[in-house]
Amino acid sequence: MILPVSRPVFVFLKMIGCPVVWEVSVGAVVFRMEDKRRLYLLLRYPSGHFDFVKGHMEEGETEEITLRRETMEETGIEDLIIYKKRTSIRYFYRAKGTEREKRLRQGRGTWIFKQVHFYPAETKVENVRISEEHTGALWLPYEEALAQVTFENARRVLSETENHLVKK
Image (tube, rainbow, N blue to C red; front, side):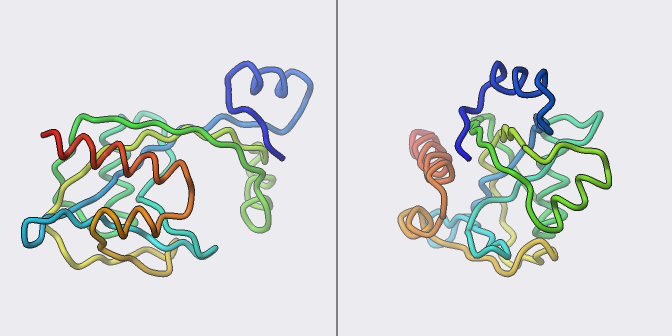
């Protein structure tokens, strides 16, 4: 199902009783410098797609706290310099399988309107310790990373990040 990801659509669906939820996540486009070139960290998810570190904002957290916590949990990286450039995306999906079951047990919506804010984050750390959420990790230069990320939204986030960093 394709739905426009906007507040009015979300509010309308909620009013008519659909199992919708609006969630905010924060992510990091983690990179490091090697031989004067920027390498980006991509994480492989169990479904096979490649994307960036990201996760749900917990109550009381700032975007920076969420970014640091998620990066630590998903990669083991604590050493980060976070840049102020913020790129946001929105998407909609329906929870399936174990995620759907978990959401139903918790009384949470299974139609998810997701907004994710990404920030560039530089590290000197090379060795990544991935979480159970992922099946692998790659450090790739921009062009290869752009070809590897799965979703158009991720390509836009990576392109905007690279453009911002080149200008700096």
